[in-house]
Amino acid sequence: MLRNIMESMEFAHQIAAAVQAGETTAESVVTEALRRAQLVQDEHNAFITIIDTAIEQAKAVDAKRAAGETLGKLAGVPVVIKDNICTKGVLTTAASKILSNFVPPYTATVVERLELADAIVIAKANLDEFGMGSGNENSAFGPASNAWDTSRVAGGSSGGSAVAVATGVAPIALGTDTGGSVRQPAAYNGIIGFKPTYGRLSRFGVIAYASSLDQVGVMARSSEDIALAMDVMAGHDPQDSTSVVDDVPAFSAALDDASLKGMKIGLIEELCGDGNSEATVAAIEKTKAQLTELGAEVVNVSLPNIRYAISSYYLIAPAEASSNLARYDGMIYGNRQGEDSLGQAESMMLTRGEGFGPEVKRRILTGSYALSAGYYDAYYGKALKVRRLIADDFAKAFEDVDIMLTPTAPSPAFKIGEKTDDPLASYLIDIDTVAANLVGIGGMSVPAGKAEDDMPCGIQILAPVMKDERLIQVARALENAAGNDFSPLAKTW
Ligand code: GLN
Image 1 (cartoon, rainbow, N blue to C red):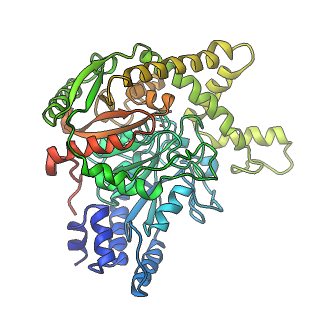
Image 2: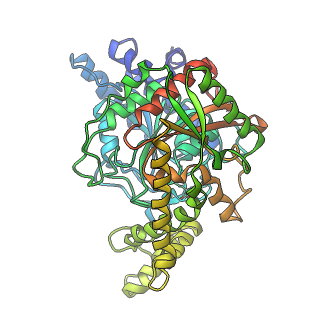
Image 3: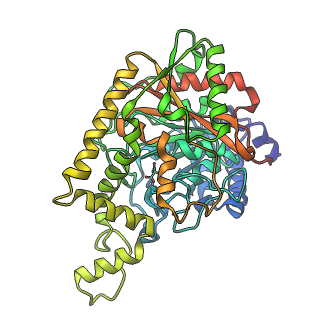
């Protein structure tokens, strides 16, 4: 009975409709989701916490229905939340030893809004420590492995969230995206990853990495589920001063407009050629042909300064991180190490030395260096100027095109351990994704079939500031064209 329920309800919109109609119960859906979570955990290490008490929330949703109350848009839908997003009373570690027993006293606004719509948080997902990484290998809890091949990385930093969606544990997961952390793992696991315009989703309750770049993003296997989650979560939050106050579009409305007639799409030349794997280039070509068939006009655009995006990002992100992570000193935040008799400075040094992993330390050192007196102008200051030039390039190109197109990553998921000795090699993977964060625009990774070794491949679409719904429209059109092959489940249950 339970099997059949989940088999016919792969997507959030189907589950919510069935729970609302009383065709199934939230309890039975969540029971099955928790069962899957445990099996996926054993195989992929996708989670840091599986929330068994989620059953109680599910029962509460069922009780609401029994009492005749109208249920929310995500009634009974299991959701997975990246473990750097705070959940009241539930361990939230950011995959760091320093926060390994942090239980937040409040819930992030985005999660609160999902719960208000009757979604059920069933697990907290694995990630790179504080979101710093591109393979989920920098987690104090060990790497999450790819949904399609356990010898490969899940992608990063929201690796566990992507695996949860790709394996069918939950139809919707939240990640955070500072330089590509929602889009790249989505591409590596064959699902949609959407980072909206900066400020569109509240960051209240999200553990900060680089505040001028951080944005919450959604992962799902259908454009309809992405739109549904956005409709529920978007909108101003007075608790986050960077949250935009403009009216929110009905993201679901973009689903009805799946024709791309008259849309002009710019292929970013600098990101589509050399440096990409053969199959990635082929995927771009295939997508280009599909988009043309769907009525869009695809042209080449050049963004000359985008070649400095990685350098700029890897100064700005660590600089902001070095400041944001200063709070983990064992005084208020962070597991304090050493005897109480230690002096303050020694206690802080011991706490930070023991609590942070090597990549986080590297970022704190680089960031502090880039910000230090005498080097500020040469590094951080220059990175900010380059950021402006890249933004100008985008603004100019968007005068002529409606959206832009690039690969999401230069190649499909790499082998676990392959890049651990070479941090620069891992930074370069972010070449396609960091610009959207530097500029603050929305970006989405859409499945584009399989690449080398039969691993999933994604293409990235980018829209001007606050035009995020265009991305949902394009994803919907590509999804319609691909049919059942669009985002297949990595597991059969
Ligand atoms: N890979 C990038 C980094 O390590 C992006 C991470 C992210 O978006 N959180 O900084």
